[in-house]
Amino acid sequence: MRNRVVLIAVGAGVAVLVVWFLFFWGPQGGRLSDARDRRDAAEERADQLEVQIARLRASQDRALQLTAQLEQLRVAVPEQPNLAQFLLDANDAAERSGIDFISVSPSQPSAGEAGEPAAVNLSINISGGYFQVLDFINRLEALPRLVVVDTLTLTPEGADTGTVRLSASISGRMFTTAAAAGPPGTPGATTTTTTIAPPAGGDTGVETTTTTAAAGAEGEGP
Image (cartoon, rainbow, N blue to C red; front, side, top):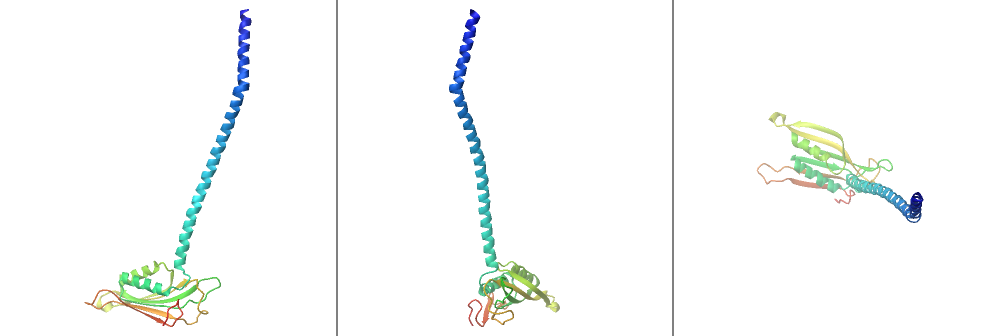
């Protein structure tokens, strides 16, 4: 009798567990499983979004770099000859380096191959102390405007006085995307700027004269 009661109690307990599982744990377990699936999907989506955000940030940084590079290129090879600005930059480099004399003669742009920038030929003559001349050449290469040096001729001066001085003749080119003023070899306007050191005992500073021959180079007149 007692065993029968125990079996009935056990059976009732099992029945309760079955009912509880079917009506309570089963649905809750399914919802928990669905919640885990949604959580896993959300975490995966979050990881994907982080990757996309990182790519967008990298693209933005790259775009900023490209914009800066394009601006540097625009300054190095401008849309106009910008001869006046180049003369000012060359004079500034001459003053900072301390050379005694500089003469710059740029030509009008000459046409090149189709789709290529037009070249502006340069003839630069300078003279001064050895280190001053070398400093000017370094400053010329460091200008924002792209200058290609084709030939450089150095001639020593003042050997008999014991003072090391140099005279330098530079032939080079800079470039512009503006249409050339004429076919290659066509004579064009030249602009010469000369910087002369002040006489000993005179006022400090540098006297600068600029002469423009003929019109047509970026709006300069006679």
